[in-house]
Length: 116
Image (cartoon, rainbow, N blue to C red; front, side):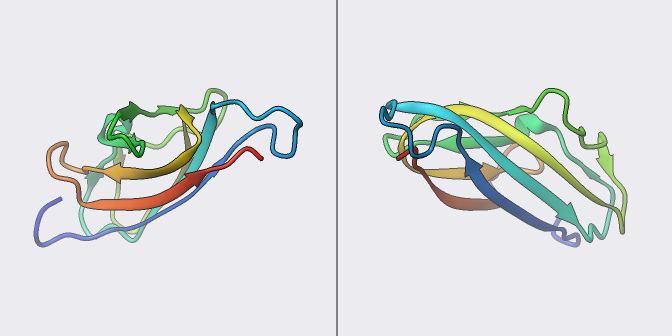
């Protein structure tokens, strides 16, 4: 992002299927909900600028959840958008990262993948 712009970014999750089942797989499908609002300037939001990291440093490219609302190519000032991202990741700690300009990580969120 540019130094003279801002946006509120919230990420919740991951939600995982199969919590409480007798068999816990070592990896599972993770779904995060991303909300962007209050942009002060037009903000391109390519999904490729979001990644997740596992505890060993492996990078996971997330994807939009099929059949769910997609974000606009550019978030206009004052607009808000909510969309879902998904990746298959191992259980354990992780980090969701966002590099709005595609280079430098501007925001990150800690999470734990649990399926027990």
